[in-house]
Length: 99
Image 1 (spheres, rainbow, N blue to C red):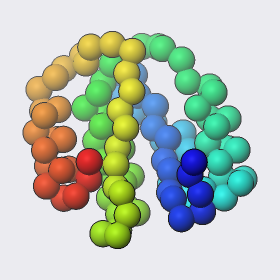
Image 2: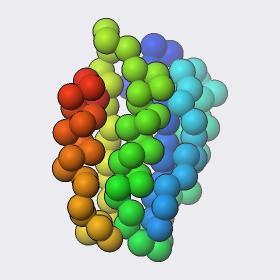
Image 3: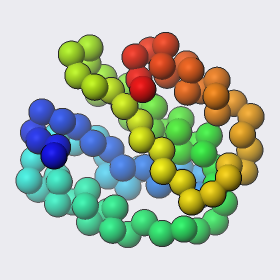
Image 4: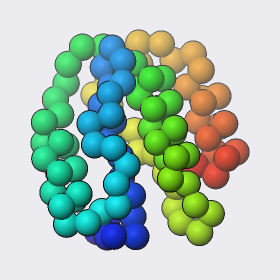
């Protein structure tokens, strides 16, 4: 349902975080590229949610606008390697208008 008014970044995380598809307006070509990248994801390595969430928050902040939804969706296959700091990171993002 994303359209050209929307921006999407895909971040993968395991023992660290990696931007698979950088923030781009959702043109037909960008949507296709993002779907392709999502199709390459699989469970591997650790579960460094702090790196994944932090990278996602920074990506949203780069494109953040007050008149749009600014959101990180974190999907994981497991329990974080280290949970310390996750709640604080999420609350800090929320205070900046990032859900």
